Image (cartoon, rainbow, N blue to C red; front, side, top):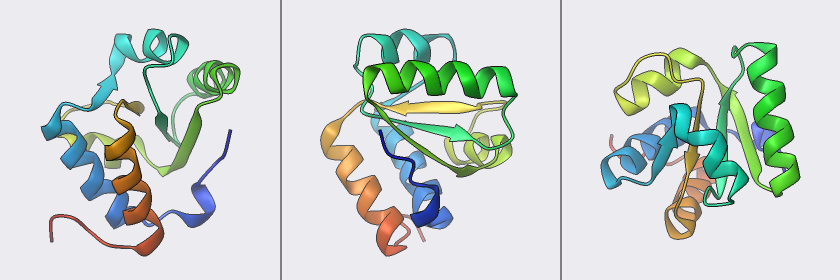
Length: 113
């Protein structure tokens, strides 16, 4: 499991999350934990300002399932990027979409500028 907060490019990640949402490749809310447990999620984006209980629960489940976690965003930023409210974590479900997201995080490219 890798934590990508050190290489985080916020604009690239926020743009990519919006793309993932429109493509139907995000899991969030009550469906996230079961998706992590059955390994249908390839990566989790977890808000830095989520409650300690929530962070621990998601980190523990992701570690057990060997799923990477990306941090460095707030609840407000994640929620804004996907057009919803109070989303503390989202899971990316598609491997090909995840590759695009990771390239945009590392390069700093925004997808919708």
